[in-house]
Length: 147
Ligand code: AMP
Image: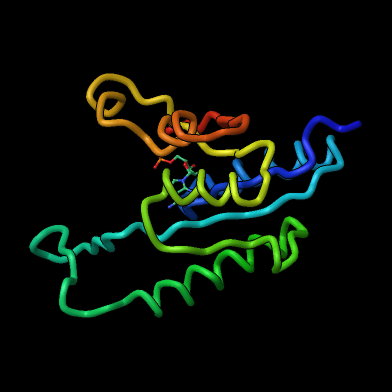
């Protein structure tokens, strides 16, 4: 019997997402497992302005952000043959929501990217570290090369 039946790809849509997604897809195929996808819209949408980063507190952008994130998730899902019922796009804290969704859906393995940060960045923590810390299942970290 296959050890991994449910694999969850956690994607942040940043430049390296394809590399992480391809690894998750390969892994799921090898184990003949179901591949799912999760994207979490962080609680505080910070945008860049000419004055620096700002948090738009007066406008509720949740609905627009969810719709646009869902579109992106659907495009990725199509590329990697993930059907709609295995896509989760939510708002909240990425580390908490990713691990909550994994537990609720009996995921055996979460796949995340990892930048291999050092020094202060490591002390501040990363999503990959936090997911590893909070997850009840195995976590695969795909090494990302920073340019
Ligand atoms: P980071 O620590 O923010 O550089 O992210 C490392 C990895 O965590 C990413 O490559 C994704 O796999 C995952 N990740 C980060 N943020 C999110 C998010 N908002 N939703 C889903 N996955 C995420």
